[in-house]
Image 1: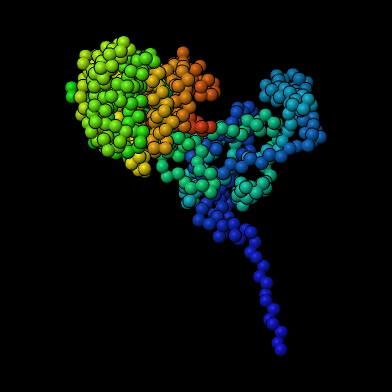
Image 2: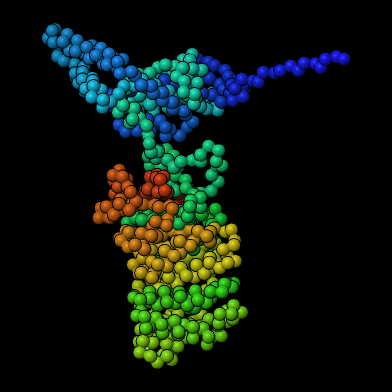
Length: 590
């Protein structure tokens, strides 16, 4: 019987063969790893003084570059010996100059003072010395691109008072020194103290973060503008946040309407359905240019019946929801909450008006024509009680008097289309809060039905000059309830206001702001900056930015992420978004 053949054991390939490039070619000034090229620069000279985040310009460079910082503590005995030697050399230079009658060298005097100060801090344990090496590896797809990129990085470093030298004939050592291996193969370090090293690390980046390793790349979002403090873009996707709401705070003339129009245009391209509450006719031209619908409240024949039950809503409490909204509307019309006796009379009158119209708690009856606000007043007068009679008299201007045009008939316009603008420009000031509330309610009725909620289409509701509603208690409560419930209905709410006190001065206004995952601050007045800084946790630099911001500049806040930006538009977008001839043409052509 023959013995079984022995199996040959094959040694596993080394880790470098699995994780490394397929081939590596080295020259004096660059390395070719696979199909890419790289070149390493060594930082050999540093400025005399550095400020916070002094390495940030290198990290924000828009090309593909790896910045490697190697830090190793220097033993205290070695640090003390080096300092003594350095101080002795500086002192010898000063005494030699004195002996020969020469004037002192200011550079030597300053260095001697710094060395003495550093020695004192080290002796007290307030600072330590470290060896620090900074290497820059620039990557490119082709050799000409690499040469151009290296020149750009050297120019940038020179502007930061950093001297750089190529790792000539040591490109392999440079490449490995900037890999995440923790190995300094170049050993071109110099000594720094704790403060200089701490200032090198940018604990906050001016750019919004990208996806984490292993996470899928972002596929949505829109461009808000160019980053003010780096060369990057501010690209943000509200639909990837924990809620889809946003708030925009800016003083008059800061460019907030321009920014929101850009947001709307780019959201339309992204397939989002948009509805706008427009108090000043600023969005009608945009709607007409994009094939949207404009509903002009206040024009003859434009009516909204607040007692309409949404078509297709078969929920058992749909009638109750309408009755409750009538209470909200009456409170806004009167400017105050009616006394308890009048609220009780109003509730009975609303139900009686529905019953006279043949509408009960049976969904089969909800297709009947809805009663009008005038019918509710008639039902109040029928009760013949002092509270009901008084309330009916107070509602007379809106049912049969000067302000009845918006309510004295069935709803005349059913909104349809991807962009719908509800213009309140032609409403009297006394009617504007009620008109905006009715428009919001009409938008919400088309969003809150079960059939609409089940659809995947995203919806954006923009409320411009929201202070009109926020000043009214019931209007603010309606906005708050809408901001809380919008996400479950694939809807984002955008609140725009120039009156900071209305959004931050009340608990409801603060709640609306807190329910906005995307917050945009633009130019602020000196009187309001303290309240804004307290509410949004602004640094002193961010406060100065908002006080001095030019038109179109702002600060985007998304959770812990912040980015200062300057809104930019194409020529076509600029023509659609500009509302004043005084707007700087170069702003839109950027």
